Length: 450
Ligand code: FO1
Image 1 (cartoon, helix red, strand yellow):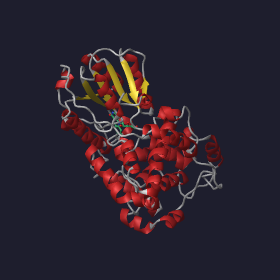
Image 2 (spheres, helix red, strand yellow):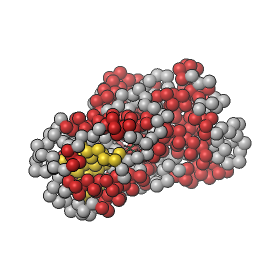
Image 3 (cartoon, helix red, strand yellow):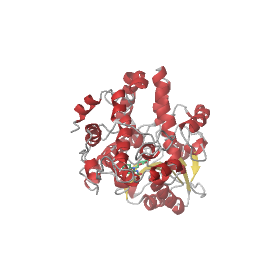
């Protein structure tokens, strides 16, 4: 077996039949380093064809043109790279829970493979497809180095509880990826595989909010690999010291590529592990593997991951006790969105987000905590932070984002700290703390916080 069978999970009990294999690409939008695609290719073997499909869902969790544009450019590259290996790519539009079984029937598919994803919407699509498919339907975890279903059967409390579990298993999973074999079996003759995707038309037909436009980050698998190479060569050695300085450009800036699956976190882990960059390497692997996989663990085991109700009981209690505390300011979502609060630093962070689709990790914490401090209720703060995150971040609607917001606002994976107004015992952060860490005025000047 090319792929460790502990990465696999059966989504139905139907048998494998003779016929083409369909790989339903969703979270892992890449040709290289993709365990799901490798497994589907192996299932097809020499005898059967492999067909790759992506189903474009209309208005996915409020995504805007910014995110769709980035994703579609990456997918157009996927189509070209698969064609070079003789593997057909089909782009569908509509409800994936219905469209995937329909295509599988049209192809006479013998089995279907898809990506692990802990989000409810994906599990809903997969559940509907599992019900409708008369053939074997298998999920492959191509996102986590240690598969999320293997690392723990329950919601972990914090990084300190999942870390030893990951470290115990990582040796088994952090292996080099095999190459994807070209395909010799001819594509099954059907209307879907005969038609190339018309990317321009698809883009023009999108019914999404175009007010949040594309950003300058170059999309696609090649750009993602270049960005990883540059990070490892130029910045990994200073990562431990500079990652909390939003002016220093010391972080990896790979999160959008991970979110759209244009780069495998495991590829980044292999590159970091082979770099010999000592301290930077250890700090980066902690963020890349332990923190990232803790986020998948939370979303997999807590269905309220995108609601304040997903927070730990101690945090909900303390926030409730401070619900009526007077707020120094109480801003509307509109004021936050337009970067018109009384804090030049906060406004600068919001401007960075609006202009680039990215906010530095350290500023993400400050940004979210201030939304809690300046909103009428914790629930309103959570809704505002989530809405702005998902609208402007290139990597919005991702387990990392859901967890980051609950960490900042409601103590998730954290512990109680000294009690303060509004926050109760949820960890507090203020501008003075930022001033001790980095040159705040330089950041404000760069991002025009007024
Ligand atoms: N995944 C899909 O399978 N189909 C889509 O149409 C789709 C749209 C989309 C738009 C914005 C965005 O941020 C993500 C989108 N994704 C889509 C899902 C994405 O690849 C991730 O799997 C999840 O958001 C996080 O796990």
